[in-house]
Structures are given as structure tokens and as C-alpha cells.
Amino acid sequence: MSVLASLFPIGHIYDLVVADDHRQHAFVCLTALLISFFLIRTSARMTRAFTWWPGGVETGDGVHLHHFVWGIFLMLGSGFAGIGLHLHEPWGGIDAAIFGVGAGLTLDEFALWTRLEDVYWSEQGRSSLEAVTIVSVVGSLVVIGVQPFDLDAPASAITVSSAIGISLLVAVTAFLKGRILLGTVGLFILPVGLLGAIRIAHPSSPWARRRYPAGSRRLVTAERRFDDPTRRGARLRRRLADLVGGRPSDLDASQSGRS
Image 1 (cartoon, rainbow, N blue to C red):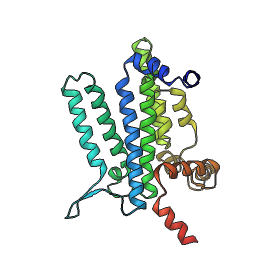
Image 2 (image 1 turned 135 degrees about the vertical axis):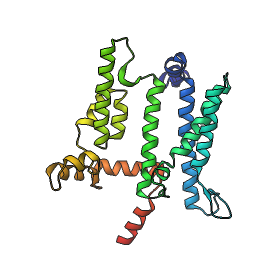
Image 3 (image 1 turned 60 degrees about the vertical axis):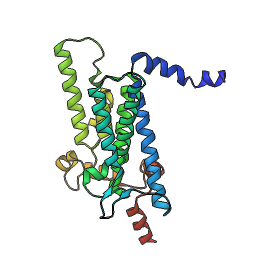
């Protein structure tokens, strides 16, 4: 056991990085979010595969309560409790866990409540996985103590304002190019945001629609990089997304039609 502890000092890392800086609640919230997301996604895949697995709640008159509804209620309740009550341990950690569970349930159906239609098993539904990825990365940065805009050291008002302005400009540029994850992380780690800001834009992004004319070399390069399913990176991302989130139904239908 001592050898394993020296090779994987998880407890020591937690005590050093999380516990000593009082970020336990953030860690509990993030952990609960990820666990609830994987559990509810697994349940949804079981419902899809087996008729005997209990699915969502549907009333007699056809009202379907998606699980993001329960997630919203959990987030509202735990949020009000955390704001309005002086919670001592262990109740503070329990409240953080409840909020994380609600966030996991809600983000799993991110594509539904942004598109206002049931696209859970479609290609558009993959945006839920992207949302969970972005929130998980940001949550991990918060847990380990990385501060946004890199303002963890004393500085003058001009320096602070300049740092915030540059970080926001870089992040917005990355967002306009469709590099959402890189732009979000760039608010915490500026070089990552710069990477998203200088790289080629996604072909469907506002930046590409505005600055990449039809038939231009940059648009052709962007379409080849992002839309070519034979690229190694694209295949790897799709396999990982299929493993975590399940295979989209519209992709199954299109492939069955070709066969």
C-alpha cells in the first residue's frame, strides 16, 4: 500500500492543493457534477437500448419531464440554501454536492434547452458533451486554484485593467472563431486563449462567415480540418464522444441508408 501511495499520492495532492486553500466545496460540487452526468447518461443509454429500463417521467396527458427539470430544481434549492443559510459542516458540503448533481442533470441536456427541441440523440445533441467538457475544465481550474485573468499577484489598477482587457479580447476572438474551450480556458491561462485566437476558425463560426469568402483557401482549409471525418483527430474525437455519450441516431440512419 505504501508503494501505491507513493506512486499515486492522491490524498497528499488533495490535502496540499484543495484542502489547504478551502476549496473543498468546489471539489465536491465538481465531483458530484461529473458523477451525476455519467450516471444519467448511462441511464439514458440503457433506456435507449432496453425497453425494460425505466425512462423519463411522462404524465398521462403527454407532459414529458426531462431530467434537466429536476436538475434546475436541485440547483435552485441548493443555491437558495447556500445563499440564505449559514451552513456548517457537513451541511455546506452536502449543499455543494446537491448543486453539483443538479448541474450534471441540467448540462446533460444542454442541447435540449438551448435548441428548444429534443435533439438528445442527434448530432446536434453533442453540444451537451461539449458543455460538460467546458464546465469540467473550468471547474478543475477553480479547484486547483487557478484564478481568472491571472490576477493572483498584487498589481496596479492600470496593470489589472490591461490584463483583464487583453484576456477578454483574446477570449472573444477565440469564441468568434468557434474555439469555445480554448477561449474559456484563456480567461484563466492567457497563452491557451492566444492559441485559440490565432488558429484557423471553425467553418460555421461567425469569424469564418465574416472573413472567409466562399471558395477561399482559408475556408477550404477550415472545412477540411473540421468537417473531414477521415482525419485522425476527428475519428478520435468521434469515438470518444460515442463512448461517453452514445452514437447519434441520425448518424446510424445515414449509415444504414448507405449500406
